[in-house]
Image (cartoon, rainbow, N blue to C red; front, side, top):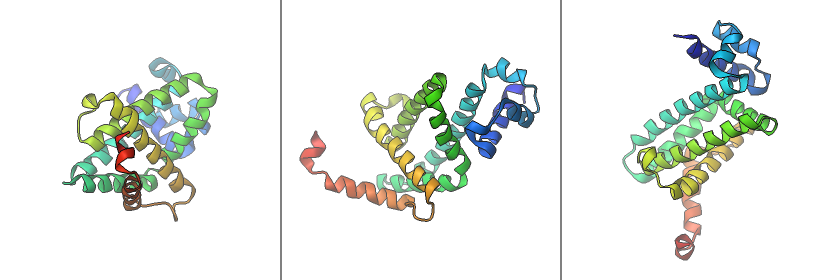
Length: 194
């Protein structure tokens, strides 16, 4: 494994241990077992490295959730399976989710970080829509990215925040799927056509 991969692994560990704001260049270099200069050489900045590490962790999470969802036969089962898998990660990947929130707060003061997070959100919208539709990401229509993907991202963020703040009373994956079905039932056929 090269310095670049070592740095990514070290940055992921630091995000889990310290979060975005408290992780320093020195922390990452120590965790990776490389010099500080390697960060600049391979990534250009601490923020770029941490963003790459966060995106990598989220991509791995998304792949795991998609695999669970793909094992279900029906659309309803796939929705419940996907939400059960997502909700499970709010406990098993709690540090990653805290780091995501931390990075979003820091983006207010770092335009490049904001741009990287915005690009990551767009990827998340496309990936979320693709997973729900059961099609490859490059086949997702832009309207589905903007609508289905955006709503899925909003739900993930909202449910994740509930799990971070109050895991004892946060909804389960089955609760989320049931809530989505209840919301759909509240929309009249005429409203659905709009």
